[in-house]
Length: 274
Ligand code: SF4
Image (cartoon, rainbow, N blue to C red; front, side):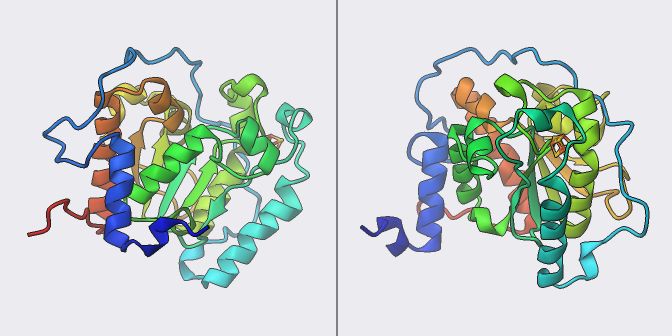
């Protein structure tokens, strides 16, 4: 049976996604369209993720995607995935994985979402953000007027940490070079970090916690050639949004995404076109 959304216009689909993201009819952010708060907004305690000091980037010239065709970029990403990541045993996470989760999306994506690490469903399927949090991320992307195929979704580590714990600093460090090389090839215009581990992992361990820093534009340090200065928007991880599903949290995430949309020149359709 056909998905009735296929018959909707792009603007209508986007409005529907915004409505789903916010939980009620789409209204301006100044009005609260959301159902009653259900839980505390307190941020759960998490171990700090330090900047990977021993991040490896292979010797030799960096492969920068800016001058490469989409086909070349896709081939370069696939080569890293197939030839290196899938057989990687650089850290202990290799022992518990079903399969690696490289990341997916447009190899020329202007927007890259960086999460923490694969969960159970991701480990099972080999795809990033396909569980409940992934469904919410898909809604967030749709609310921006984009599809998952138009962005790139990746995690700090490619293998599932046991019991979905936060990746340890040595695990992030071991995997960091893969992420940097992915970013070099994709060459995004904007990076959205989802949650504390991804934000601190990319911006540094002394970066303020996500509750304070979300919604504030940051600049990616020169972690590797070609990466310095990429605008970074930290926001809550979708799993956090699901856990603390309050009007305030959802409006904050939508506000962060709207800033990204403005930066990328994307527009928000109005519910009542004049
Ligand atoms: S998490 Fe990264 S570094 Fe560790 S085994 Fe998996 S692919 Fe290798």
